Image 1: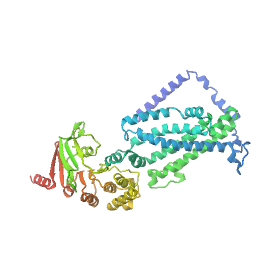
Image 2: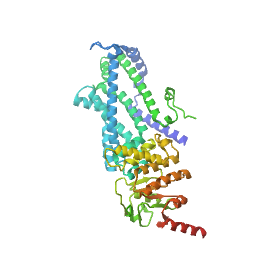
Image 3: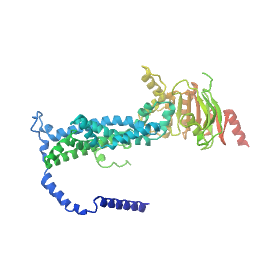
Length: 288
Length: 228
């Protein structure tokens, strides 16, 4: 069995290699010097990161006591976080309504299939395309960003949620149905409590995802830190771009830690041992 | 208490594709306790699931003569509990189904929930998630849920399971309260002793036939069989 799995992996790797060769049309010469080009670009344009992005902007005049709160980095990141937060919550509410209609164990197939097709359609447009659409419809600014991310969140979370619902044990659903609980009551009192851990975990994942993608949609004018990245790229100020990228990286790591902390309070492990910062960072061992 | 049948099976044929029974025509009246006996795989669970509305009958029909919505209680083989929710939440599901909308609805639901929890002796576990309880305690929770529901007909699939005698006494004592109020019980049972001590009638399945006997007839038949 072990050798067969290894064999399959080798064949898949070979196939991927052949496909890549086809894509570059055999012209591997393009890669020549790529690494040294990257090195030169990094040394001459990006390094050292320009931390002036964390200082107050020259206009409008800063009225805060601490300069940092008027900086491009802070203002951009806060706007991105706000967009991500609002769209994750709105998207979660929309997704849970639709995913409960899309799960085959909760709804008849003639309801589930059209809702699934709708969710697939919403999901098939990346958040960037949604952002472009909303920028065209309602103009530049964070509202376009919020709507774009909300739509994408509905499509993405909706799929994750109906798959979790379909994987739950059938007996609580059957007991609820036989007892005469209504469909909304089954959703609120059986399905959501039974899958609470998964839903929370997906919610945290989606928030982190939306923060990361918030930077991308800002590039098309939908608000957030991406707007500043896009501006600096246009003026070839790569050192400032690099500083903002480091800032995004730090925020994503912090969200990931927060997500681990929240989830460790509700998972099975939480029954026997409350999490510490150490066992959140290092995968917790089962208590002997 | 009206003596009209709560459940009537009219030439009912059960099964998944292939029939598991000959046409069944039986009635259940208020306050009756029916134990369904028979070897594994013969259709006991399928019958319960058909009456619960979870499996379509192959032919024939059944009539539930229930006075109110939520008049049917059901304890499946795997108990049907929400494992990640608390004991109180699970029990409240029973109280949720048939209390009419009113100002006192929430108060009434709470009272019924905690009364059922107290009857089953699990008040110290009320705020714990069900997944942390032992198998016996979980069976008590499922029974409390049905007790809070106060159904007219209770369907139970091996709900006594492998309980020890103490737990059997607690659970049957609680179910006895329902019966006093006219609830009829149809339960699948593997242990003949439980059936003998608790049931008033027996449906025994033999070669696709449902034999309907009073408990006395069944005891007599089994003792004659043993003597032979």
